[in-house]
Image 1: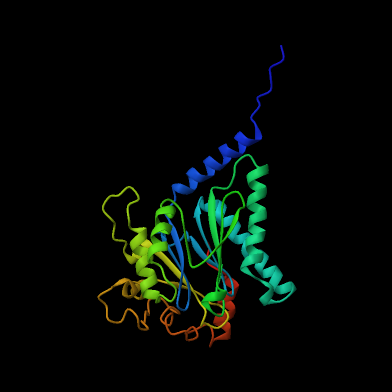
Image 2 (image 1 turned 45 degrees about the vertical axis):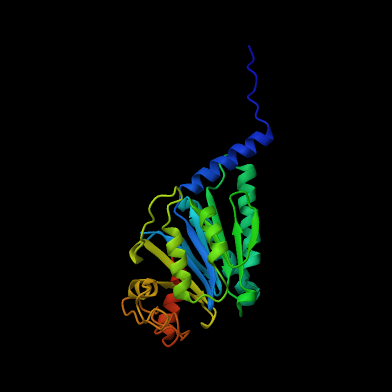
Length: 279
């Protein structure tokens, strides 16, 4: 007796894969990417000091993700390799967020249509320009779709609610302190309508692309600097804040060259050899 082969229509198969990926992404903590007066800020609820959701890709390009860590880490590493190879083969200015987003879209689209399980990830590729008008933010979903975002984007579990609030409250030209405070406030809101949470600096992963920095614009913000930026009662929150516990972060607000790597060629070579932090 010959058994009938099991059949699923292509439409139903794609729908099932999309539902599966969306459920996986919704379980992740949200990430907010938004412009401020000097560049682009990345804010994620992430208490882990080892597994990053936000990372540097190239000189003026950064990567943020939500979803399954091992899957978006593979994408991050592939993006670094793509950028390094293109920059080495042609020129550093030929490495763009648009080109990287297109490469990611092809990979995600292929996995979604041809593999048995889609990637449970949503990512943002952002590039800081010479002015806020030339900043680029691209959002890529699990199926390879690309959206050119303007000003801000939110991903993850409460992404839709956060984006709705950002539409009402975000405006161009926010200071870094105001942009971070807004993002952290929205990350702490309960999508179900419960009492909001107060997120401390230790529960957050924060980084920026600062357009006024030389070449490598990506910097992480943490420690006392982040605490000061989030403290509305701190009179120095909009001024340069020194943070000796986080070398190289003290000058986030001033645009000065990093304390060590720009003045010590040996340290700079060691820093570049390490590459962007793992996500």
